[in-house]
Length: 134
Image (tube, rainbow, N blue to C red; front, side, top):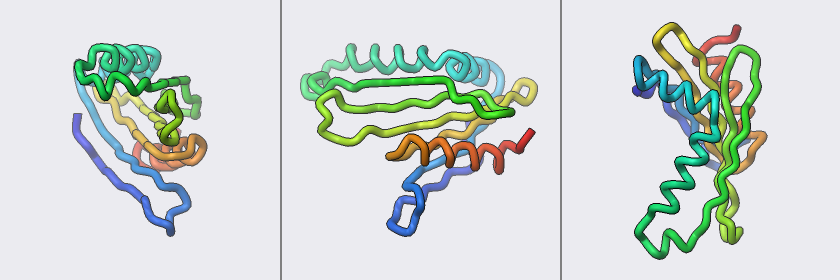
């Protein structure tokens, strides 16, 4: 996988405090990523399994709530994710992924931010700009 573009707007002058990247993968890596995009519950299960297998007592004491859902946007496949501490000690983080296959290549945008809707909107805008509208 390689990054094609990475940016962040994290200051007070930003409408949304979001980090975003555009990436490309090919071959088996693209196929594996496409499988997660089609079934984001795979990512949820993987994150939960990593948490359960963590040997560090302090990290294991902090339970992470993971929620995933498909993200429908014309011309793209994608999903949303939220990560939150079960104890509510910190606000959740939100992510949005939008992807498009181009033969053996998968191009996708990943946005991460503190608000679900702002993160989704940023992912859509960047996907249309970087991956092209259909």
